[in-house]
Image (cartoon, rainbow over all chains, first blue to last red; front, side, top):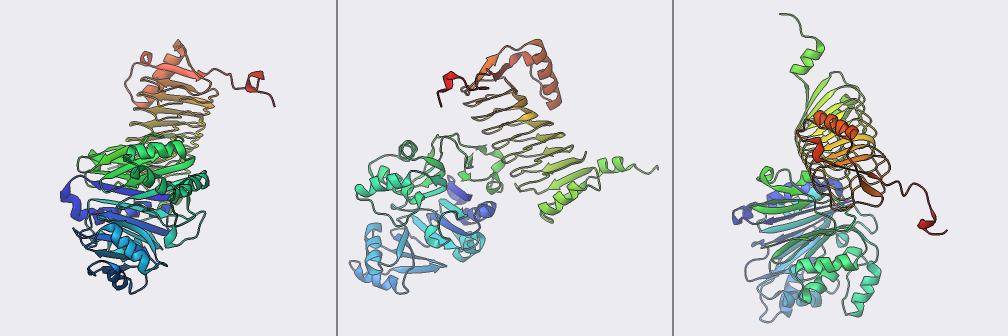
Length: 297
Length: 235
């Protein structure tokens, strides 16, 4: 059992409230995954300002901002913000340059998210405690995703938290388990894809990233995932402009979608959606098996 | 002024449990050994297991959305959810009644043995899975794989039914007013005879829904999967 929440704001007036709305939603799925959490926010202008990129890192050495900055052309100022296990570095450079500089400066660190618009936090502990550590309630933005984890197959640590963010501004969160992930991992490795973990969900994220890199849109990528992957899944996948939900053909893992003129939201359980503004006027439904539901900004 | 009887007093002022102030555990402990006959639950906020395991003839009104397993294993209680219900509402109900004013999530009435479950909105996938005698009336539609392995009881769907309706069904009777996506293995359409119109009338009346019974189609088991035959391969 794990918990997923996602919120895609259509009405810019709600953007200053994104963090508070996400925090309230998180309360509704904390019981589903009380051991660790990952949170991704799109459009957090404070942590990832306009014209900057940001890289979220676990196991970051204390001097990473300076050492990464020294490797960048023109030695721009790299800002580091530490919240719990995660360090978010931002700089006025492209995301690929910043990611490469971080990797070169601290090979022992693990990059868990990167993008021009994205900030990712991960940590072990109770989701509500971690949300406070990150200052989630005060965050603004236009889209957010969180995953509360009840670990079943691997250790409770920040590395095991979702979302898996393996391409710039991409996130994938997964409730369920893939059964043929080892085969697909080998296929992807043969194509040159490298992995950070033994986790089955990372294989899903790498597969989607490869499809998107080939030019697929989110819907096509997730349909291809459905043709390739065997197992149980509810997936929420987000990109720099997209928000998509899909369940496997048996659809044992829960998902509820609510669509409102001002926002689109998804959660494992309705109770996470119950306090959203205007929920009574929203179209609330459970996604059909195997069908991709996608929205674009 | 004459003193009120206990029933009259209860009817006028149900015992209130505000889940902002107390816990589901405290609520259910009271409902399992009731000191009153009428209860009102405020601020349920989608909590799980509300009113699960009621034995007695009591009324419980849940003012808001219920989470998983609401009114599961109900014996004689009359439970109303003024909102939506999560997975497995009235699962394994034995008798009594459960009414959901909104929609219900997956596996509504799963394995239910008796009583009446009314969902005024729609129910999601696997509604009535493995039902064993419960009656389920859905005002809207039901999702895919509903009445999977349904063994006994009646499922009435006033809207549409999703794919795989009645897969591997035994002796439950299914009535659908709208369209059916696909029928599951061994589920077939059957003629709507007078006795079926009569039981549909009864069920729609009990649910308080105003539809013409003749507008429904009946589905049930072709009884082709009861026994292994040569057609099922050799072992």
